[in-house]
Length: 411
Image (cartoon, rainbow, N blue to C red; front, side, top):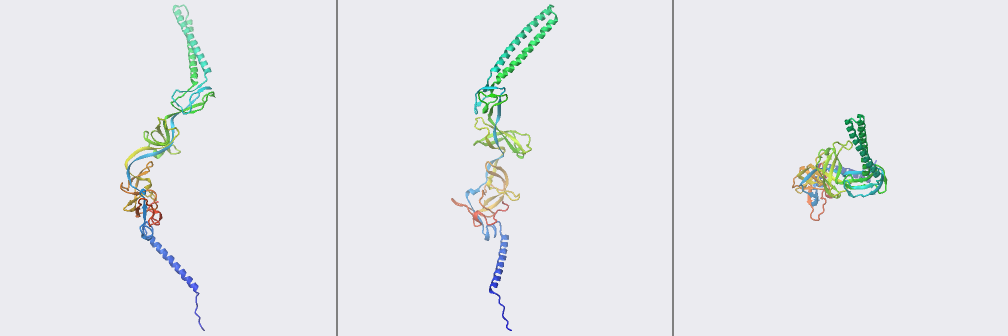
């Protein structure tokens, strides 16, 4: 019996060989990747700078690097609000009647006692004249009663009249005095009514509103004018409870309002905390003798509690936040490389856009400011010349290191 060899199809052999090669390639790739990750530093596979262990670099412009400097810083509490007049007087009608004349308009400055309007006073003047005549008559009666009393007392001392006549004369004098007092009170009332027909300003200031015109009939208590005192403006600002402890009357407040910078003072501080907002109301007064500031102007200011001289500061954009409670840090350029320098932050002056550095930097250091891409410890730094372009090195596009090239603890 003849044995024939068994032949496998060629295409199946090739197919098995390809599968084995693919599996081997995947295993080799996994081992290479694992080894590279374990050996690499901040720059990614192979160490700083990206694949292959080559050092990453970044090109910076002059504006991307700043030097810490000494400056004067102000510890201040920010406040915002509307500048309102220190006094706003609403002048109302004290009687009912027709308005004969109005003599001021909105925006007109007035002094205390200035005539603003006048009521028709024919009836009031007549009553006042009648009261004057009545007072004169009662005074005449009182004078006659007093003369009669004196005569009766003389006759009584001579025994010509009984004591009863003296008592009657005394009663007549008392009644006459009462009528004089009533007439005098009526005269004062009518005189005040006549005075009320003249509407006068109670404060010196500027007419803010005029709500009456000549010929109108107004009722008692109707609002006629509003006069504001504009030589001093006041701002009521809400300060957080924790910051209010440093605010005291007399402190300087620097404002920006109406396109100009002005200075005011803390006048009063509320004695209690608002339970809803947990804030304390602070009242700031701003002098405005020339009237250049208008009431209702929105102002932003800072209550200066203390000033720190010769503080080491850097631009606020140079400070980076640490991760998970780590202290803040800056990227420092030293020896042509990037260093991660942890710093202690002090005051923040938002007006100047700087941050105080208590420790971690020296005046001669150079730090990176702004967003220049991904940076990492040990990256090489090249400074762009005139017209140079900031860009990335071999570690990755955009001026960053290779994959995973961020500084430890940065976010």
